[in-house]
Image 1 (tube, rainbow over the protein chains, first blue to last red):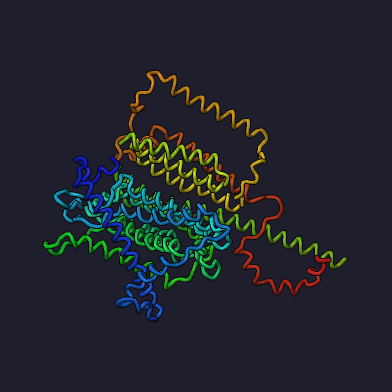
Image 2 (image 1 turned 30 degrees about the vertical axis):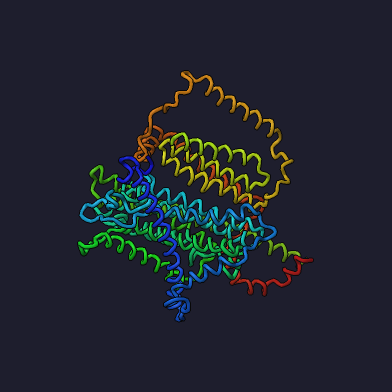
Length: 412
Length: 203
């Protein structure tokens, strides 16, 4: 019913189909865990290189097993329960973080031949199926819904500890995530407009038929998506959530042992999912040239992997390069720059789309559209500036008044 | 299958609703509310209204209850000690009246339905699961465009009103933080000018 887009499920469900679905889910789960392990190692190693130090080097070749060692160590540590903690919520919060992180990856098409009008189906045990765990018709909305659930994990973790640093961290985190979700959603909406579908599979098919969405939507939404995505992940330069200098560790300060590991895991898993979503929405998913006919199914997987790696590299690179934002800068960027920009661009793309349907010439429409948007932006920023100037004046007048009265006192 | 999913959804919704009523801690009550909203989303999926299901989770669970939690956390109402206070006079009797009449209305609809309960779908279906986003959009922006626009105006009014109320117009306004930084540059000269003024204020 809800998964009917997958050719596997159209002709009814028998044992083979059920097993294939289970296999896909199992493989996705296992690969996600392994890749989290490798991504943590990758980040530490890369950031060490950028900071001119060695990084993990002892466990396994090039320290590649460092994460495994850390994980095992965390498993055997004592699980602390702060006395003032709300027990139920304390135990619930890590799962509210990790489960959306796992489930969100289910909608990502990771492979399949999309070249020459291919629809990305592969054959597996004699059935044709998509290389994604699920293809719900609401596709990317499913991802957005899950990312709004993930806010609960962070928020409740901070609250349940009954301690002030985690509470401050979690309030910051949830405010940040909600603010940037709007910009993220608007950037994604532009993709919906261009692709005409919400389903990740159809978005990828649409891109292989024409051009990648990063160009079709005109770079801007891609940039907004990247910035808002970084903020949504609470990664540097938007990591106010766990600013060590101010908040110790942020929302997970008092978590230890396996519960802390779950938060850590979900953070990196979200990073992988966000990269994969970016690849799916803007860079054509697993699309790419198939070079050899033998093992042809490997190539889409390889392209997908390389594209995701490019994003993961960017996230680490940002962390090594940029200093942290201040809270007011963060809110200014989110509400006053990204959301208006995303909204304006969305309107422009919608206008162009309508103009194409009505057969209007493109250039005048673009000029008029840009002028109208620019006029709107000018009005808005003018109003903001005027309000600011008025407040300044008022404050100034108030200060003069106080100065006058005190001077008067002095003379008397 | 359908019955099983419906039963599951109904159990989620009802237990969540009971939890909202019975939880002593406002945060727990908010969490039970999220559970109820999830259950409703499950029922939406069962009705092949997948778009509504996703939006239900995004808007209600993802935004509205988060705002509830914000208020609970920031105002520190995390103990059940203010249950005895009635913020609006006569709120409880009114709530009882409204609740009973709503229950009565629902019961009437169920009991006095023309053909009894058929189990068949009412109204026109909004297309199948894959198509209902488009159909919903078309319905909202053609037949119901006035209702949509009125709702938009209502929300805008609410936002403007909230901003106006939050700015607390009593007393002179404080300068913005940016202004405060700019001011601190010329602070020393000012202090030099009026040291007497500062002491005068103290006396």
